[in-house]
Image (cartoon, rainbow, N blue to C red):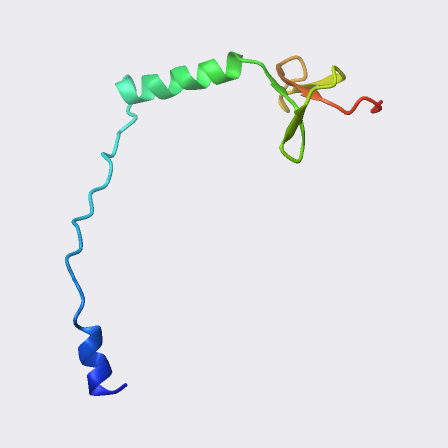
Length: 88
């Protein structure tokens, strides 16, 4: 590389902002962070959702649904999936 190119490369602005990370949370027993995570988990676990079909950007609901259960137990309904009308 020529000296002229090197000098031109060094004529930049080199003020890099100080990196600031988000605070590290402990999630220790009985901490507010752990309580918040467990509450969010309980809400998600106890909620039921319906998963529609998507063809392109169109959301399609046919009324033909099947249950989707947890892998660990078949009596825990997680969601209902929507199938095309002509699916068995």
